[in-house]
Image 1 (tube, one colour):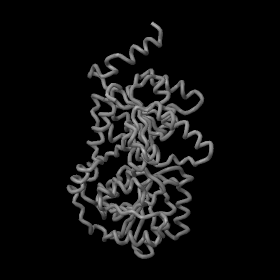
Image 2: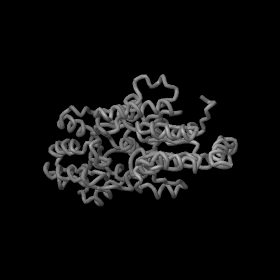
Image 3: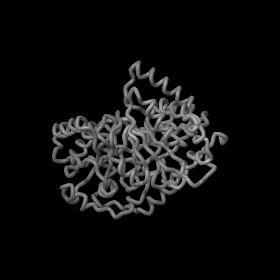
Image 4: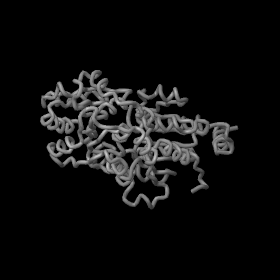
Length: 399
């Protein structure tokens, strides 16, 4: 029997089309790298909560580089496949698809998903998902980029069986105002696992660990160092907060490229904030830090659905954020989120920040209330896991 006949026979066998239930359907997620980013962490949370007797998650990483989350994926029973972009990528990727017989390819790389899903369609993968997780791809707007985006969007339109976005804002920015007329398009909010947020806040312990005086006002921000997160503006806003609240500190949680972090450290020194800004780096205990803080300041330039803001809501931590569509969608469900335009002055941001602050430890956080609010919101992890299970169970005749 020829290899192509064998592959075809395997691809459309009952075990791959849902006729048997003794083997899980294989789902291939496509990311640049399994770094500690919001989209990557949210996908791992789905992996933990979805029925792994029905679905098995694999990850293809287009950078070809190892990621911080690779070991976690393997601990959960998944596999990571480095498939670096290059001249041989189409052949390498299709060989990966044929070797594992994936039932779904779930691509998280913005418009580049068009190229990925075109290859998946050529390999006859039944379910092909383009997932928009941001309002921008951060790659500029040159003529070459516009032409590339136009081609990639056409391929998404032709080859995707599902088009998802993490917020209405991300869907409109990525797929257009009339997205609801496309039956494949759906806004599916990220789900958040609340278990780590149901602990007693340790205000004094967090401050002691970070060498911050007990009782100090503690502002925080969670996000990698990149132009998107707007750390420079964050420092300017905090400088004004500090001028009016001399006992305040700012904790920056997150990593990123050294050439992105060093300018922020230099800017902190220029503003006289070197002894008031703590660079905490990448942390595994973000919920604990948020539970121990007093306010999150989040002046991002663009976002899809900021996971850090959701995490702050789960911790009962007030958030002052830029008035992006994804933030506004979160604010519909959580009154502790306030928005401000980036066009407003640092003083206006400071005024709003100070109005949201209470003395350290003085704010009551009923964690049971937060769990109830999340459970009833579209951000509940159980709802997200159920929605993805339905998508991964899709059959062409269901359309």
